[in-house]
Length: 421
Image (cartoon, rainbow, N blue to C red; front, side):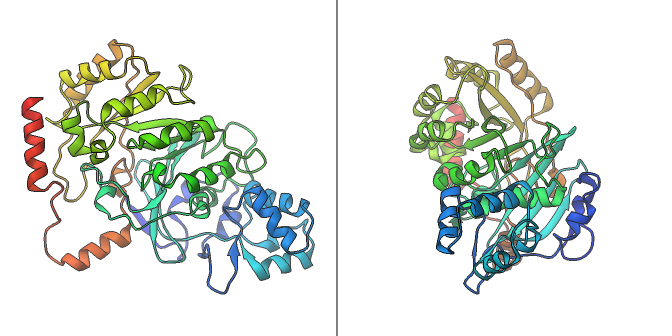
């Protein structure tokens, strides 16, 4: 395995190999970290919608067309400094610089996996950090975006779930993850053809997006705007662990693709694996999926299902999953469990995963097995956890062992569920 770990301000970045040809000059300007929201009273324009941007320009005594100019430079051309805006009068640029910034969060670590997956650790003005991952695939790629620092949920198989929730990200901080990724890959200005290094966004990073929906929605509308980043809603997938009351609103207001972290087919098992199930059990979750406004045979809901040895991987589980999916335009994404330090689960055998997938496919449900990407840099599904949190834990515990993923009561509940199962 090859692991490249490099502080960004020092020399060449780990993602150099992924850039578009001819992007070196542009990227050279991005190695010095620029704080997203600096101290000195200046505010970021990143994350403002068009109306808010127009209001800020009006407050400066400028015409509405200035907001359109700024939008073009920030989101189509990727400008990081007002002086880059060559068709904007110098006096206006100086006025902007006096009041605002359009910088990026600091990239404290830039890692590149042996399979080409890139992971960036981003630090915001308050010192909090999140991870963002780019997964390349034959001339295109998906960007895995975080929505919270830490996570409000405590899914037992997920590394992020062991990190205490700290705060929601702002629309600026969510949008900035896309901008940083494009900086690193040299994908400015916005490509006008289908050949994009970032062709899809998956809201599958740190946090539960539906518990920060307003900021997520605002950021995604910026990303979807046709005169900027211009990524279609069909290219955006929001993953939820099952915040049932918010699912309808997400479909109506954003219309993005939906992925559901299911991971179990009975309430007793899912109560342990995905504790939000105790509040919104499987029956309620599946009904919300049946009525999701943006779902159709052409845009099926993806059900994510991590394969855990002896827990949820039997053919009986597969049969029950087929029963649950009845009436839902669905596909199943089978995820081999990605281990992380302190985890107590094991991945199902490849034979068991193949048998599970074969049964689902035979019943008419597309069930690809997700190829693990970025395991060697802890960038795979369920492995994200900010380095600052890992360091803090290390300092607090010194040589003490990691806390158990499941406490005694949860282990007993799981054992009882599996005995009945």
